[in-house]
Image (tube, rainbow, N blue to C red; front, side, top):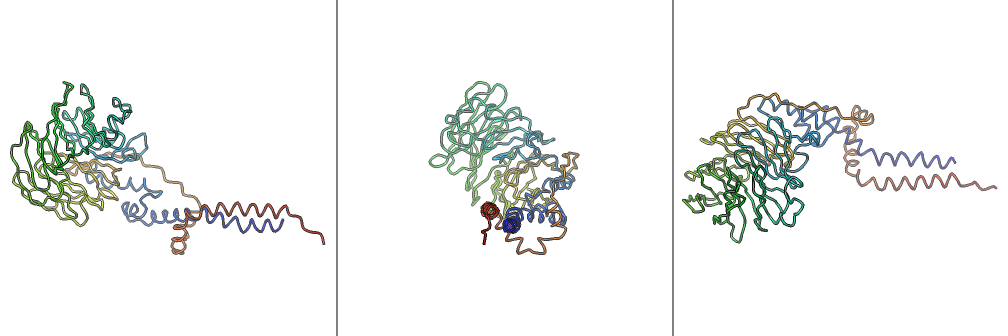
Length: 438
């Protein structure tokens, strides 16, 4: 019996240490990062998925509220998981800036921009014949507002591609084939999109209204990557070398531009071609071909423009505001801990989506303070082992050991469980073994 107890006394601590010590060390480091933080961004940079993530986000809300934060999109059914925890493929502000439209790999949603709450979901059983993905495709890679926000259009991301219209008295989905599609835009009852064919071509679909039919008109423009519907009734398309204007399916004029790389889009008023080019944001005027180059310290991932205002989002999570008239930087603020992936702006509001397209914020472009807030989350539960270890600064006292244990933690679990089984089997055998009589 004594040998069995000795085996358990040696084996069990080794098993428990190998199984739980790596995770406890991670909690100790997280606790120390929270105690030693100089600000919420500094904590999230060190522990982006730490126990105090929600508390850090609340501190960011308080900071950004004074910089014009209106809301961040939160689906109440998922607590405070941004965008319901689903990656947004596209996000658009409504014309009046009071709503947000997002597309994901499964659904499209309308959000109240003032409160950040999800209002309507389109997709699955909310769309006709949604289960027939072999016929209609699935997912929404592009979304756009129609009828000044009273309706929406969404384009499926997986072939066969189709465009869906959501709202009252709208036609059914329009199948547009298996070729890749992108860059959906809408205005009134008209929809324009890009479809890649043999040489690349632009298509415009018109009259998507109550008549139940949609006329598709081809607008040939090789290598086109940006398209916008103009309020005066025309269509503007852009490639890396050329801007073209169309009306009633016919080209009206064109403007050569030199070396615009690959345009990411056009501004809402079609006044600028928007091009992220490494650490430079390029804007090409559709009026005279003038190039405006905005230099950054980090890679530019998103651009939007409205009137004289240009906003850029960078890989380091910052928003930069510029004057389109002279290229002057007006102000800079930090929107998140990771890259700003998508931007959309109206005259009064800005929508930024970052953190791998899972976090969306609505901003007031005048920088006016907002009263919006979320209930403060409860403090996380930190066990006494992690608290005691943080008080003793064990990760700081033994940094090499802490690094190794965290690195080996996942690989130690299986051997630890196996060693526990062997230890128990050995202890049981020793306990049952009878000593031999001399």
